[in-house]
Amino acid sequence: MQTTKLSISDTISLGFMAFAFFLGAGNLIFPPFAGFLAGENMSVAMIGFLLTAVGMPLIGLIAVAKSNGKVMAMLPTFAATALAVSIYIIIGPAFAAPRTGLVAFEIGARPFIENPDAVIMIAEQAINSAQLFFTLGFFFIVMLVALFPGKLLDNVGKVLTPVLILLLIGLAMSVMFIPGAPVGAPVNEYLSSPLSKGIIEGYNTMDTLASIMFGMLIIDILRKKGVNNPEDQTKYLIRAAIIAAAGLAFVYISLFILGASAGDLAKGASNGGQILTNYVEHNFGTTGIFLLSAVVALACLTTAIGLVTACAEFFNELLPSISYKKFVVFFSVVCATVANVGLSQLITISIPVLMTIYPVAIALVLVTFLTNKFARPEFSHRLVLSVALFFGIFDGLKAAGVDTAFIDFLPLQAEGMGWLLPTLITAITCLFISKSDKHTATA
Image (cartoon, rainbow, N blue to C red; front, side, top):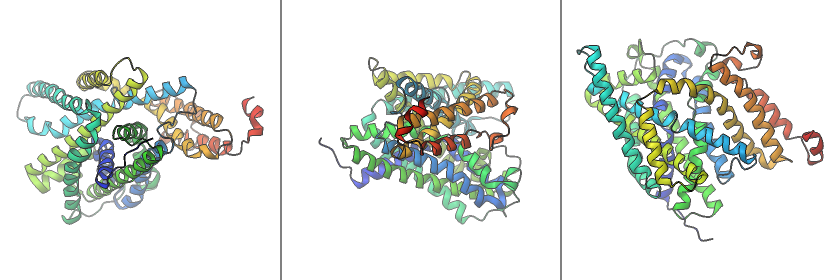
């Protein structure tokens, strides 16, 4: 089979594109607040955060590469389809993609149109109208770029992402060279258990789910570029994953330091976005706010493009009678609508579902790496994922407000990760199941 070799610049662009897909506004908001709360324990908390916010997405991409995009091949067709549809809908049109447009407006546009002197009702009406026009324009741009996936590497990897990276490097350099306030004392869980708290905060970025989507998307882009050899696809995807992980780590470390040294700029802040905005405005004035708006808008735009493209690719393969371009238009319209109507209700519904699905996604990544170690890989995949789903359901019920106190004895249950130990025990047990145990295992 004839296959194309990517140049060094194309490989770097592929990595830049992967980095941009992961770096949404939430990734810019979490680290400053975590750094501020961690204070003197920032280094330990940051290690925990990097493990789950960088390490797990990296491992997820590598898992997709190792399986040549077929991470769910060991599951029954119905189960694999249901899991994939759930992931794509949650990370796509139901929640994450619409949120990119909304957050881009809140941080990238709202500071320039909000009039604090106006009557609240008038101001809110004006802001609602501005939000509508902004999100329509935002997802129109997303649609135009996503309609031509063959050019996605050029549009995102070679144009949008370098601009985003330059702006982020400027922000990071300011953190290093502009003196900050003395680092404060850690508070809350960052005082008693900074490592585990950092791990949970990184877990909440939800990028492991996205890594499964983006990994498949990147493989599809490589095919469109003429890279048909599975070994070459794996090689390039792993290289892209390493570049993306390095970029994410660079951004997170600088933002952690920014938050830890924010001092009075972080007083009264309820999230990292406020700390980031206060820092930029204090040091760079209106010009800085403009540049921050550009960073957030680009981060949200590139993530939204990746999400809409991945969803359209997946559902086009699932329902080939409907063209890819029709799905792009449909998802772009849905995202623009959700960003303006009923988003809070969808968030309320989505979080319990997400808490249920996320353990399964992490378990899927785990068993993908262990496939060659399992004597009975198909059975092992199904058993491990079933255990993760079983305990994940309780996490989802807890997030929905259902009393699950009867399983509070599980380690990490209070942090919403009670599924972790049972899933690991099941995976380890499956390593010792031999082919001769077939009848016992299926009994």
